[in-house]
Image 1 (cartoon, one colour):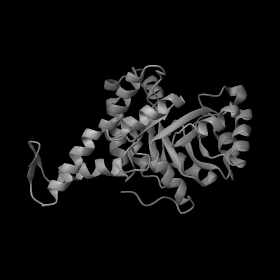
Image 2 (image 1 turned 90 degrees about the vertical axis):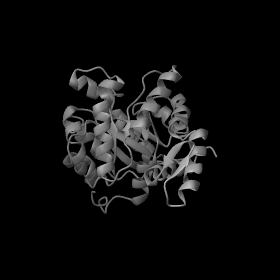
Image 3 (image 1 turned 135 degrees about the vertical axis):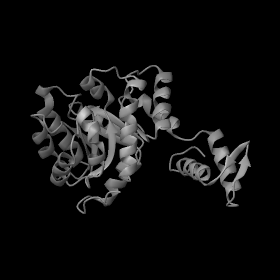
Length: 285
């Protein structure tokens, strides 16, 4: 278990990053979309300076983001990775911005890179793991005192490996990030994007798979993905009913049967976790 986050990091920002379930990307060079993204219903908007912005537009995007975060806007900013020629300028542009809730570090591969970003900006980091080196170092990255959350960029990771970004091919990496997060005392990692915008079945399957593995959030690329993602991560009515029965039966402190299933301490703990997620703000009750 790692120590707590650096003392310079604002506690409200840390809590926001740890509890968020939906992260909606918006290109940093499209300032006309910032307000709409902020009110779309996602837990956090992510103003993007990396993949969504062409090299020639990055300077203008930094200015637009700075203006937004200085004038009452709030959100996370994804910056280019440490090896990028744009990284230093991205980070410098964020220093002192009152609306900056956190920085998402693309292609995070070391705790030192996350620490450097956090110390410069004064906010916690979401370490976006997108390379084989990043996955190999996930446990060390998660224990950084500047990292509030891990996230998985599976499309870039698949490209780095020369693999397909399918669920079976990406299973190993997702499992590593879940375990690294648990060992570090972090919430479950944030899963990567679903590129299908009009196929809700694909999105639902992706969310279900992420949830089964222990991930607890998702990166989104369109507002229409917000509600289905939130619904997918929340326990359904059947799970909640089962959890309530188990918790009630488990109060005896002895192994009992509920619906033909033995209920002992680990099963009760799982049921309590389901009810805790159900009772989070925004859950349908």
